[in-house]
Amino acid sequence: MMKKLSLKKFITELSSRLEKLPYDELRAIILHHAETLSPVEREPFLDIFKGSERRREQKPVRTEADYLLKEIDVFGKWVENYEYTDGWGWDHELRDERAWGDENWVYEVDGLFEEIDKLYEAGDYSLARKAYEQLLGVYHGAVEDGQLAGYEHDEMLRSDLEEISLKYLRCIYLTEKSASRPKALFGAISSTYYNISLTLEGIINVSLEDLPDLDRFGRDWTAYLQKRKGDALATRLLKEAIGLFQGIEGLEALAREHGREYPGAFVEWLDALKEKRLYEDMVRAAELGLETLPDSFAIRARIADYLYSAARELKQEDLVKFALKEALYSAPSLARILNLLDSAESQEQRTTLIDEALSRFGEIQGRKGRSRTTAWTIGRSPDLDENYVPENLEMYCHLLRGDYSKVFSLIGKSKPLGWSHGESPNFLAVPFFLFAGWNKDQPLTPNMADLWNQATLVHTMIHDDWEFDDYHEELESRDLGSRFRTYLENVLTDQTIAEKDLKRYFHSAEKAARKRVDAIVSNKFRTSYWKAAQLILAIAETYWSNGKLVEGQKLIDHFRGKYNRHSAFKSELKGMAAKSRLFSVR
Image (tube, rainbow, N blue to C red; front, side, top):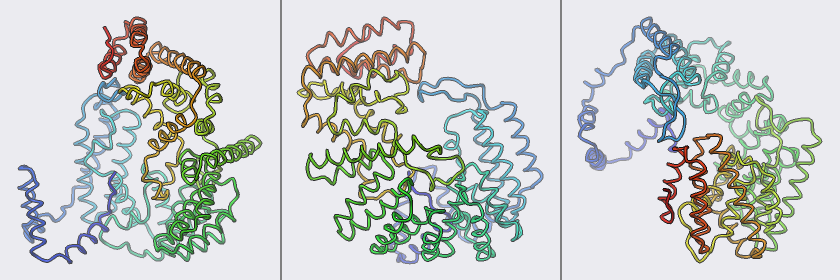
């Protein structure tokens, strides 16, 4: 996903680049861009160069405010009456349920936002505030209640809802008195749908004009937020405010003086130091953070990530290994296990690291078993979250260690549903033992390859550090699923499974797979029919790899006959068989 630039940053950067370009080079760039335009884009592009005449024509014209508010109200009533949807139904292309009906609401919403933008650009912030608030409320309520036809509604709009929300917040800032500004702004951000991505910096930069009285607001804003201790939104905005108005010194002071209350201050401080490449200072700040915060705080992992980055720059290998281990122990995840294993120089070292990790996981689980508090609380700052061991992480460790029997023992105990969400060990255990039973003299066929790839990718989206968006760059760029697959495939090569055990493991995996197929199809979980079909074909293909084509076809025929009246399932089965090019569905 491309990074979005605020208007102020975009114009500032564009102006800077234009000033550095000679006339001939700028002319060549414009002409080259013009050559790439489609025929319908050429006339509007030429209109850009009308100069002062165009600027006079484009001056914002104030929209009739009362009429606009009535238009929004009318649109809201149409939405309430379900005029834009005929109900929910299955979409074969999306393989999901969605609202069907009249999608012209998109033009209505975009058109209304354009009219409100005219009020905003004309400086009528009071009326723009009312209109933005009213339309945003109607739209988000309609999406939540299924009153608008479509799927991924935000993507259907031409309007950028995040930028619109920032304009709305800027209107609040500009229409409130100084004394009431912090409370009003915080209240609006709290109730805004996109509050996780809304920042004061965004409010400042959504326009080219400076916000009035910003220094005073900075002091009032910081003081207001400090009173809301432990609140997730207030904590995030406080760290941003101190960084904006007080810089590195302010972040350092917050970390040193109130680090236990605001653990994230260490992260913000470290991030500011990293931006300035002050690596020795980063080491000292990270070590202070790790000394200050309890072992149970998951945010220690983020601090350890910064320590890792600084240690790499300073070429302090012992500190690098310490940081990797501390990151794993503070916030266990598969990504951090692989990062630590990458630092090992032998299989013996990797086995020792895995054993130590399993011991640490046991300590965390023991603590949580005795604790009456949960690892997280709704509304509380995630900076205060306690660490925990993600479900099935210990199973990954056993596989990486080659403890196949321990993973095998989990198969029969697991439920046939919930694989896609990582709730069952079988989402990886079954594909693993199918892959283990594959004849390696044969290349993987399409369905088995897809199943194996998906099994090693799903967990990376469920259990790993999606919230740690500053995860060190050296490791972030490497595909986690691919790394995990490589590790597992190497383990199977280095620690082969005895033929007798392999047959037992494969039979258990096939039995679990059959139960899953029955659970999906008999309960008519249409969104998962393709998963059931893929699983059947993957097993059949594994039989084929071992010279048992007839066995594979019998398996397919069994389920085709058993669910002969389930046309949607048979369609998926036919599609998977066609992709395989080895089997047929009659």
